[in-house]
Image 1 (cartoon, rainbow, N blue to C red):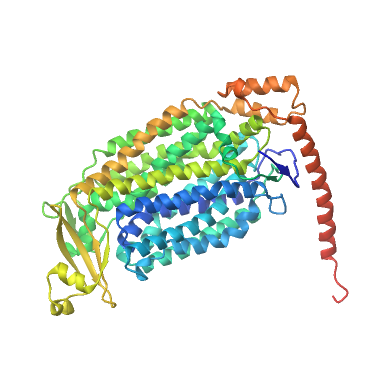
Image 2: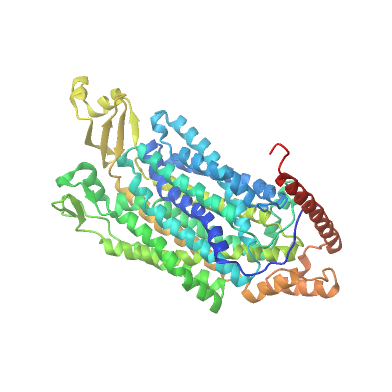
Length: 612
């Protein structure tokens, strides 16, 4: 890789990160954690039940948009690496200028394109185009932000504590963004409810990014490193065994989370609480509302992750990050296996539900609310370990990368990590719609009055005198599906399903549970071979700060340490330490000269003019 360094300051990390600095830094993940979960939990039902895109079409849509997200990540990583450290460092500069784009992109992402067109191809095109725009703005914020994480400090324990605060903010944001948006926006509340929700949360995300950009401060200041994109150089971090293991753990967790979050509400509405959902939609027995069990259980899942943080921090200190990750994965698998035995809600005909005097629906036959909340709690305890360990390990892996390759390029590591992690999420988001769509899942349709009249077997006069909203049933491949129709002033009729065929219900359940279990077994195998401990990380940091790089003693220590981490001594890259040292000296000289020029310029700008 050809590199050319520019201005840099290379002070030793002070280690300790102040509370204010930790809090400002952690604010950035209000956007990272919250936005992902709003999209993961609400986007699938939004696209299928509001925009009216067939479930099976979600597979290519999500793959295309995620592939785009992954493709641009390495370029953005290189751009941030090449930024000369200035008033807002190397990373915070990009967060600052792209924060407003987060608001715009988030609103467009949840814009109900069914208000613009009824053509499925047009809606698919608009969704893909807007998602790509949003993904670009998001990457220009999050790739610098995650690289910024490794520059906060190089102390192992302090880095863990800083990332724990960040993850706590992320999980708290996730909790709120799982519970509140669904109360504001839902298919039954209409398309405009999504515009209101996206505007409110987009503004919050923009402000959180601005706080992190303006008020957090890095301790490890690295030089500007300019590189030309090269596929061989892009995948270079994969040569490191430690990085491959770290990446595998993160990708498996992301895959499992993508599957579970994207279909959690669908599982509740069309399986676990299928009759309650139908009753409220039809007004059966005077039903007007139901306990928001999906929202509460999902919120408990994220609350449990906050509760689990000190537990996993303790496990890491007493045991290791590897042990903490495996513990979380095992808990997740056990809870998911028990969920296989959760029964669906009974039908109204056999007394599966009851309606109170206030119109609230209560489950009589099926899993009780308290049990679903308990499952959410224990599921969150397991997820907490698999999410926290990779989050807190990125800086450690970058330390090993510096020793392995001879230079520190968090942006490149972050770009490749984001690309492959996004790929894992894309697969996790794309596989379930394909499976569920093939089993007969029914999405919302927008049809003309003529098509609706034909479907209902009505005359034009009957349509003219019908209610603007109502319920009807239809047989699809031998299974009955109930719809709620709504006639708009334009004559377009919305046909929203309020039940699903039995095969689709079973596919939702099995996909939600079994796919994460399979991938978590792979994650445990990978984690069992992860060798980077706090003791080895401390030795890596000490060796990176050595003043005799290139000496026989240094090379011997380097080879020994990397071998302990699972690398093959004979395959270690040869590093020209003398050239790197010369470049470093030039960087420092350039930095000093530039600083003097900046100070002179700043001083002249503060002098009042004669007119003043």
